[in-house]
Length: 87
Image 1 (cartoon, rainbow, N blue to C red):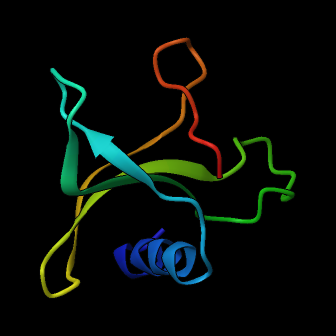
Image 2 (tube, rainbow, N blue to C red):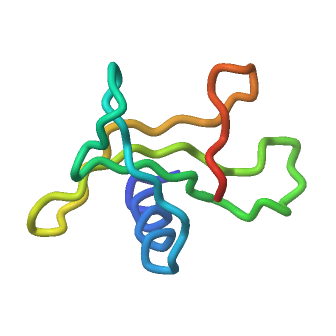
């Protein structure tokens, strides 16, 4: 997937009202004011190609001018450590 297509998938998730969650501090319960996380679909989940469902976990910061900075993105692994956020 190209970087442009990845960014487009994130923007589409946000523009269509996809679920977004506030991010907490690593060592505390305080919500970070501009940090968010979401499960973003990057391809059709019904596509039967033997891979996962095409959902990635994305952390991002929304700046004062609504600029989005992506902090982290990775595939979900259901190994007990990385649990999928609801889409």
